[in-house]
Image 1 (cartoon, rainbow, N blue to C red):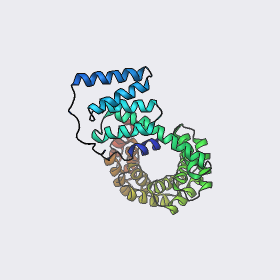
Image 2 (cartoon, rainbow, N blue to C red):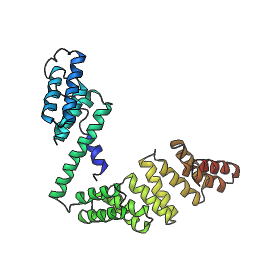
Image 3 (cartoon, helix red, strand yellow):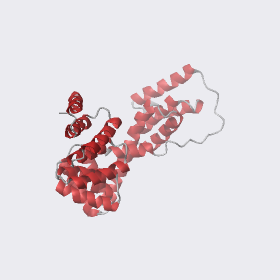
Image 4 (cartoon, rainbow, N blue to C red):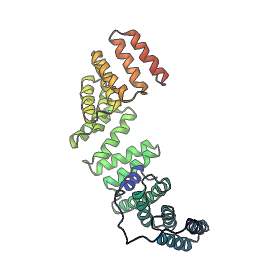
Length: 298
């Protein structure tokens, strides 16, 4: 299965460009004639007569270059002919003129998936044991919920290219998820030395909190919220850690910030309840706990 980020990456590439004009467009034809030509092309496509479908779609676009439905139809023909590059060109033209065209977006996703798949296969063929190839395989396995297999591929990627940040963070994340934090911490620290990121700081905070190294956890969460002030999860981590450090008033302000960002985050209300209880405000704590329970957090 192809990693989903490849699809998004290729889909995002170049959609802001504007196709070059090709002279003065011909007069718009009668709607009935356009409908008939598109219908004939669609029937040919459904019947598997790709040459005829291609010719009819192209003829319609010669008559009306601005016909988005005909251009999408032409892209579909190219996809059936295993020519995703040509399909991408046509769909890009549609999306440049109409970025919210649902049909064009759908077929663009198919075209970019094929393009990304081809590039992935090319990378694996050229450098099967490279860090990037192993990283992509790990991401693919992770998207299939095969975490253990993904972890092995991330490890191979890190072994192949020790300074490659993404697989290092991916490996650390998978270890953190299964609570192997003693293994994850050195990976996050190594990642931070390569390049400081939100993921690195937040992952360190979570792991150090789990290991009850609260001072270190609080410092890591502080770095995380500075790098991404809109990350509610990092504010929850910081607020709950400050509460554990005996600073509930500081914890309350951080947890309230998390709730401002994510009003339906039950974990934030639960952590706020703990902070309020530690601050000697039992009635407000009960309100926070009730809200957390209503949101499905116990």
